[in-house]
Image (cartoon, rainbow, N blue to C red):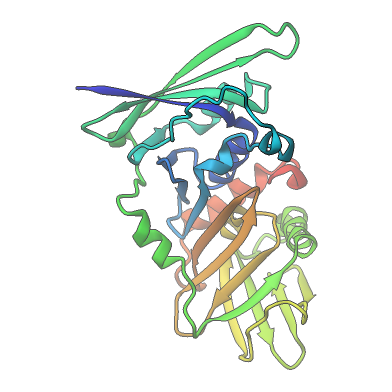
Length: 311
């Protein structure tokens, strides 16, 4: 099998690490596709009720020229080769270990190299080269990536996933800001286990005449006043329920949420450090909830030692 080496200089490891963390909130298995145009990262929850996809143009993960650099005239300009390569898959079985591998490198910008098995269009190794902060010593580390047969939630067609996460014209839309998201997450963290028969889901209820979105479980109820100056498109009364784990894993950033009564899905999206994060979550009902889902909610909430640092 022929291998191809793809080298990228001045790769923004800080941004890449943050995007990897977006995936790790959902699943420890990392599923990425990398091309010279875009990088995609997709993660599916263990309950199969949530899919999260972040998308970033590859040039945004490379050091951008400053205005001073743009204005500087080179006396002996070099012919810079345009970065161009076909998409390839990038799989990691243990994301927690991979995160430790990334954290060895402390520089914001590093040089990276992907070893790609050409007939499989799949990366087998990922190498990072940087300098250590204290000694300025040059360090090179290589991570052996996983093969697709070990990954349980592979993506074969990213265009299909993107299309499924695109809101339709009939959907109602409302925006929730960062502070409101964090208020709800904090209530989940602190109050979920104060009642032995609390629910594994959150109930969302909206009445357009009041412009209030009410989010509740059996212990708390919070009324969120939606921003009328933002792009709100919702003149219908609606109610739906989402697993608490899904809401937490979507993220802590302000977001736009789309749904309607005819669909069993809720779509959420928001910008994040040069990328766009899209999520699609299944609505749930009390009769559909299984013991496994209840357990997954408890385990996720138990794992949030510091909610404010959980993305």
